[in-house]
Length: 338
Image 1 (tube, rainbow, N blue to C red):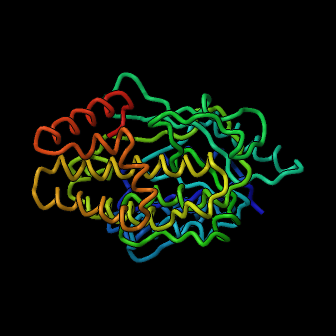
Image 2 (image 1 turned 30 degrees about the horizontal axis):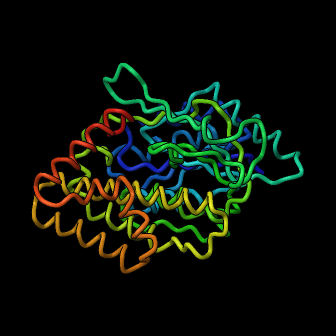
């Protein structure tokens, strides 16, 4: 059995997927690299087959009709045979030195008395043209050098939250919890990292800058103009995350608070994109999203709506919208996203 399965969702990725795959090949026989060609119309399929033929014991090529990013992640998970599962998007890559540390750590933890559910590492915003590369580090929030539980977690800062780039999950946990991402929907990486959290009992934080998250292409899903065009998909993902949250079933207070904080961020992102679009129709969609949360879970709505971000996103009038946008711009500059 492989130690780590790595799914690479690919759609028309011929211009950058080689860099991604090449960064993962140093894992050797400890890993399986599952290149999922999601109905591409360019040379993606041929490149996937090329690597599978050249490295038959390491690389798998999976071809399917176009189902979107989520279905490509699903396909990778369905084909995964490794003990752990990681998603690396085709325009991203990993740092080799940190990669070796990750594999070494996973091997060492296999011999312990506790099974590991989730490994967390830092990631770097590789923003095109930026002099300073923002690092998402968790050293202030998570213990180091030991397996820990939710009770051992310290305080997460605003903006310091765990993304798909940060995590490696135990494969069986993902399959047992019934994770299934929706088809033809962007931003499902949030569901990928969020939905399994209540099933995670043990974690380990490795303080290395492992994942390199590229930002800069005009057609990228996190580009603000693209987000405006796809805002309905952002809303759909946010609602699915709201639906999956059940405050009564999450006994641990720190886990509950973290998941609420994550939803707070999702509501903020959805709200600001709808405000930034500037249309009455999208402003009504923002109002409807908050009504949806209120109807679904009033206690959750109250917590988020009365928080700093919730208040900032709901200041009445055109002047209030300007304040919301100004707060968003400041946050974006500070954290380096988009």
